[in-house]
Amino acid sequence: MIVDLFSGPRGWSEGLRMLDLADVGLELDTSACRTAQAAGHATVQCDVTQYPTAPFKGRITGKISSPVCTPFSTAGKQDGLTDLPLVHQAVHDLAHGRDTREVIKAACRDGKSVLAAEPMRWLYDLRPEWVCMEQVPGVLPLWQQYAGVLRGWGYSVWTGVLNAADYGLPQTRRRAILIASRTRRVAAPDPTHGENTEMDLFGVAKLPWQTMAEALGLEPGLEVNTRGARRTSGGNHFPCDKPSWTLTEKARSWWVLRQGKRANATVRRLDQPAATLVAGHARHDYQWIKVDGGADLEKRPLLLTEAAVLQGFRPDHPFHGSESRRFLQIANAVPPPLAAHVVSAATGIPMPSAEPVAEAA
Image 1 (cartoon, rainbow, N blue to C red):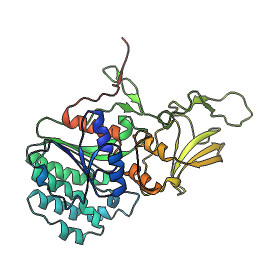
Image 2 (cartoon, helix red, strand yellow):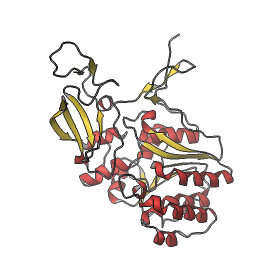
Image 3 (cartoon, rainbow, N blue to C red):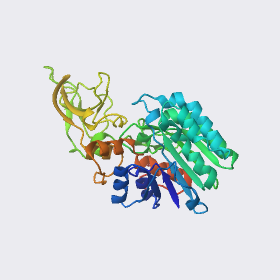
Image 4 (cartoon, rainbow, N blue to C red):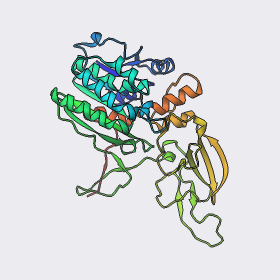
């Protein structure tokens, strides 16, 4: 059995399906549970912090955890970073069989911060064969604490920050990852994609980062001209469905995705991956904008199906709830392609997806 704590709309589970695996998810949010059940994933609606570990004792192979990231996200107040020493204490106590969660929760500026310590309760009680955990990059020091405990229990452990674009996602989403196993040696999954696709010393090149245009299936062959409306002839033509690193946001009749309402909001062209989708924004904060010589010609909001695809889900994944709840589920979810690569590294089950391209002899 594989248990997925804080399972949400099941990004981890969709990744597991790529490896012919399945899990049982524990989740409190009603909309996310309805999404998971509609997608065919076994789900227990519950408060993870109150759910007993005993039913899983002796039956668990893998444990997955993506605790609530709100306290640590750059999109919020980041009170979790202030609370981090307290969370470290909760992890230490749980690793020694002492449950101080309620006392520490009361001392935190954000009560949700202590949820990042919850996986240790399950690890202490169950000692699964392998472990995968994910959070925003600011939680990496906590994952490193977990790693020290797990190594003391005989696990091989890797921790670090991975960019989901390096594993086929059309989004440069960076996440702190922990991978552990007590039956095999683990390391970071080998990237399959990269911004730099030059051949390495072994004559192998990664695939290029997937662009938004490719992921969203825009009509191939559509071109833009970097000269814009200049009177002189010539200019550089580029297809918008392929990477073109010399383009600027002022290319003529070029669609960009503006991610937020602030003046310094991230803007990405269609020939690039999206920036990180952030749950702290509403869907309408994400705007497709057609620019011409720097002027905005057209605007429309990002569609929910487009957000799902940019997060690595299939467009018909059955998200439930209000529009805001569905977008929140999408933006908070672990991207399935990244999840699959991480679990592959933990279990040794090979990825079925395309391998990096080798140079012809």
